[in-house]
Image 1 (tube, helix red, strand yellow):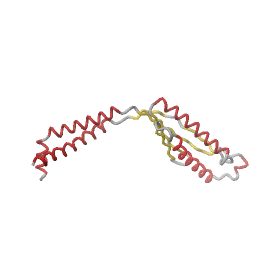
Image 2: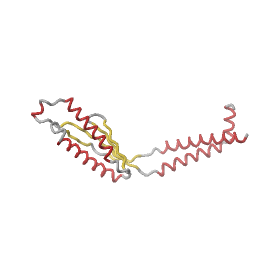
Image 3: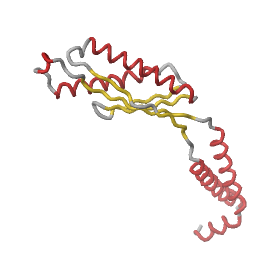
Image 4: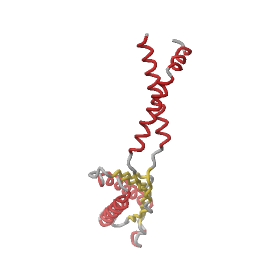
Length: 185
């Protein structure tokens, strides 16, 4: 079968192609409009060494300080994976960017709960660092600070979904037309 024949078959069954393209677009639009509103809160955690006391300043080494900050950042990332593990309504991510800088995002089901969950995380993370400052990091303590918490509504790109639905419907329509032609002969 040549390309001219395929194009002729598709032209003759243009209504079927349009039907499937519109049907795919309607399904995509239905999926987009049936999605609940989602929220996301972004924040940053900064780690740093507190100023060492005078006696320890002679033995203070920046390399080891950076290495211990890196280990504290690794600990916070691993600890955060378990912090919200028993709560399926929350999607929580914390990524280590550098030894001093971590990025996090929190996506609960409702916008009102976002700030509440963030405050709970801040309190728990601060308690964990204080625990380490009283033990492991007693000689060179770690300071932890959090950026402002920004809550935004997650928008779904309607046109992208609609385009994908129309394109998918068109492909299925072409397949249906060619199947119809195949079984016709």
